[in-house]
Amino acid sequence: MARGTAAAAAGLTLALLTACSSTVHVEPPSPSGEAAAACRRLGAALPGTLDGLGRAEPEPPSPYVAVWGDGQIALRCGVPRPAAMEPTAEVVDVNGVGWFQDPRLPTLFTSVNRVAYVEVTIAKSHQPAAVLVDLAEPVKRNVPD
Image (tube, rainbow, N blue to C red; front, side, top):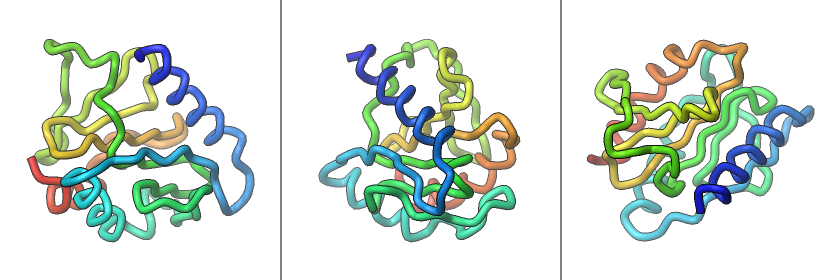
């Protein structure tokens, strides 16, 4: 399973790096129940602009995916628990939202301790702290602990 998760994340990163149009291919997760409802609320509350980038259309369309720019920033809500996250893993709090940074994929951050895991991939050309600060309020408001 860890291999599958790493492969999916690597595929997401590859899709983000190779995207060059106004639609960006991002594999959508398939949450259910309370997680799906929270993710739909989050999708509707996300900003139209993030770190100077406008929102783009994900391909395939999904209420659980948001992208900005040409895929420089991508959010997937309702992903599985990160395979690399050990019980003693370090989690950084950004304005009340705990984020796990995958040590194998330094551009991948996942919010933890909520009804749904929210994964954000941030290109190295952007400051993760600025992006995570702007996402903290919508995550806190729409994805409960």
